[in-house]
Length: 79
Image (cartoon, rainbow, N blue to C red; front, side, top):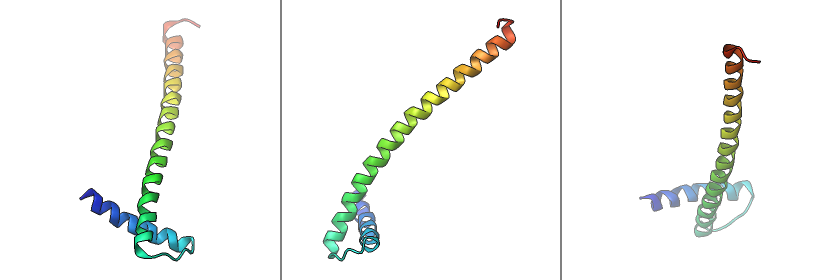
């Protein structure tokens, strides 16, 4: 089932991409372009999300540490 879904999505994506880029190809080439584009785009977006996730995790950790230091200074009586 996932292979059929990939071919259907690939065909739609290939059709849209070839129309946007004004490229006239036959149906198998359009499907191949769409499937290959889906694989490349999926990998690229996963990589960007992973890097973004790591960066956002680091920013969250720094903000959490700053909040903890502020609370500690505020309520422990130390400056």
